[in-house]
Image 1: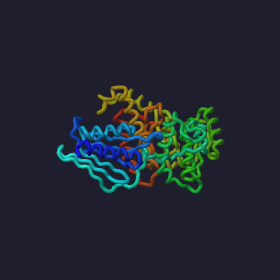
Image 2 (image 1 turned 135 degrees about the vertical axis):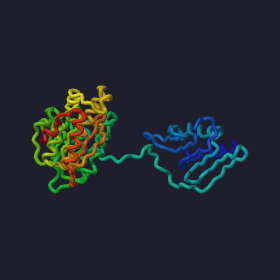
Image 3 (image 1 turned 90 degrees about the vertical axis):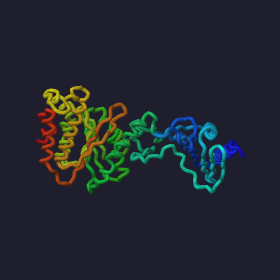
Image 4 (image 1 turned 90 degrees about the horizontal axis):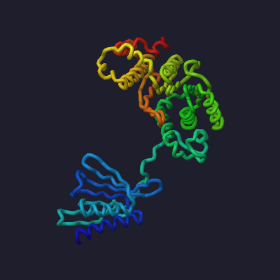
Length: 393
């Protein structure tokens, strides 16, 4: 048999495996063609939007490129590559393995061996991620917030919002699991807006973790308070309530969790202070509009290592944000909280923001050293006072 005969043999077996649904994958190697840095080619079957295709992974010296083709297109590409570049191929089917090799254009081998894979793999293009917030037709809040249709299917326009809800719960999930109490969790969400994240949190705590939770959403816009309370009632969420108010003036009694996402400027400090003063077990904030520190930095114009950089307004803004949230994290540590700062995508139409998560800890705190760190930062950047310190006296 000639080289063409042996190539046709493996191509025919490939075509046959498509037709009888025994195809697993095919790998091409020993590339001697003209395409720079191409090393190998891996092909498998996938399903995208209920349509089966072939996924090609082109392995180059420093990168991989993935492309998807129909069966006929893929078959033609593989046949061409075997004639013009690749000198080895292994076809895996659940019935048998087929091997083609070209040795220096003098010796050509095509052989069959026992199947090394006897079960067809999943055709999912991406492994389905386990969602913390699941969708179904009985989750009315998702429908009323225009995230799903009446049948519980996520709307195309709301895919980003649905991912945001799950990202939010994913970040908090491990800490929420540790907050079990006999009397139930008391939670205040300050600046709850339209309630997307507030509803998701209530859903996760009550339906996934099976915890008793009493959540109050605080929002200064009366029309949103009315809307959210209506959705809560229609969803059967009896312990989820929304009230009209502002963070600065809202009185909080004993609570386990305080949340303030995108509370502007010092409103974030108000929320943190209320959390510390009520000894909350978890304080979650996603700050924005950190103007207080920037104004002081502009007024004092303190000389420091970063002066040549922060003379540019955009860098000054970023440094002010970094200092503001960094000092907030240190203040929380001073009061016995274990803090971490993560990136949180607030909305599809806003920039990425940081989220400060503070969990009450029993670990010993070196308050003297933390105060030294805070004061050194303030001196270095010409900051005379920090609002959160003032609130906490």
